[in-house]
Length: 237
Image (cartoon, rainbow, N blue to C red; front, side, top):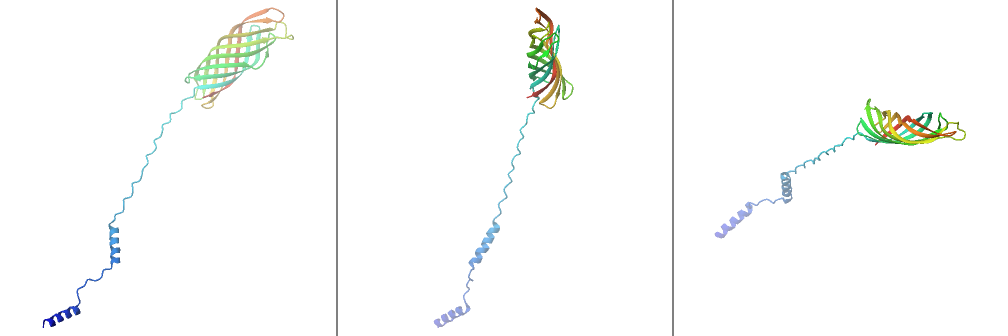
């Protein structure tokens, strides 16, 4: 009887079927889990922009007015003695100067004669060389124009000659003297470097000289003057 009951129970279980879990699709499960992981991953924050500091401008010191200058003058000259004048002389002068400010400067000059000219007393005259050092007061007359004076001391060498064709009484001799020197001029600035000028300067003032006189004897003269006048150009640096 027990065998029949056991067989009947076994048969009912086989026909009823066991409560078996369904098979799992592992590929589909992996995809779902991967999607869930991706959803949980937060995007990394964007990096903050790198801001470069603006370059600090280097202050540029304004350039001051130029003070040194060189110049060149083309000059006419007059040589005067007690016995007459020589008016057609020509010379050139080179200059080096320094302006302390717009009202005051200092200047040195070196000049040379370019030709011989007839003297009223006979014979010919030539400026050999001259040198001068000057204080230079200045008076501005506007942004580009200023009046200037020259007050200083100069040395000049002037040679007078006569030959066999010279008239009787012609003078021959050399004046190599120094004296107070002074002048006046007007300067026009083209730009901050170049300027042009007109001036007149007395190089020798009432100096003495002794001359040989054609026909015999010597002559002493005491009021010998040498004046120059002309145009020039200066360059500042």
